[in-house]
Image 1 (cartoon, each protein chain N blue to C red):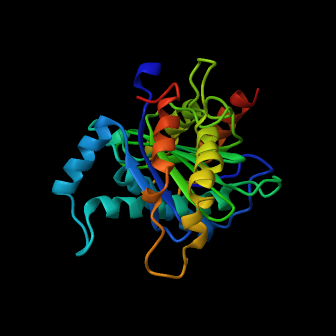
Image 2 (image 1 turned 135 degrees about the vertical axis):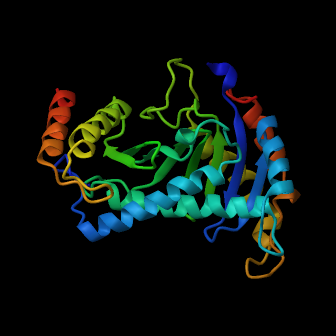
Length: 125
Length: 183
C-alpha cells in the first residue's frame, strides 16, 4: 500500500514504489548486520527504526510478522511512531479483519483509506 | 540518561568505499567485534570485520539514493543522509564534497541535529552532525590533507597513504574524550 499525504510528496509510480519497497526491505535487515553492536532482544528491535536526512525523516514500524509500515515526513514532525501504531491498528481492523482481503495482496480497502484520513486529520490539528 | 551515551566506532571511507580509517571505542563494541571475528563468515582473503564494513558503506550508499527518491523535490538542499537508527545503535554519517564518508556508530540517545527525533531533553547536547563536521574540517584536514606526506603521495599508486603516519588518531581520541557523551 502506498499513499501520498501531502502535496509536496514526490510523484512516484507504482513500479518505482515496488523497487523502493524491496530496496528498503533489504536495507532494513542489513542495518542490523552492519551495526558493530547487536542487542539480543526480540526480533522487533532489529532493523531500521528511523532514517534522518536533510529535509526528510523516515520512520518505520515492523510487526512481528515482518510487515513494515513506513512514513516519511518533514524533519521535526512529532508523534511519528504513534501515528504508525495507529495505522497498524487501522490495518488490523480494516484489512486483516476484512473477510475479502487476502494476505500479502495490495490493500485497497475504502475503510482503511478512510481510517488513514481520520488519523491524518487528528494529527494535523 | 547521559550515563549510557557512548561512541561504538568510527569508520572513514573514500568515495569508492575503501576504508581509510577505522576504530572501535566502546568495550561492548570491542567485545562483539572479537566475537564476530571468531564466529563470522567471510570471503576467502577477507575477514568478518572487513565484510561488515563493506555492509556499512553499501548500506549508507544505497540509503542515500533511496532517500533522494523520497525527499520532496522543492527543497533547496541536496538530499543527504544524516542518521540511521536501529534497535541497537545509530549510525551518524557525513559526506564531504570530495566524497569522503564518515560513519560514527553511537548508542541511540545521541542526537544527530537540533531537528533530530532522537534528541533528549538536556540542553547541553552536542550534535553528532557537528561532531563529524569538526572531525573532518579541523582534524582530518589539518592532520591528513595538510600533511606533507599526503600532498606528495601518488594517489594512483598501489601503496596507499597511511593515516597512521599522521597525528589524526591521537587528535581524534583527544577530541572524542572531550565530548560529554563519550565513555
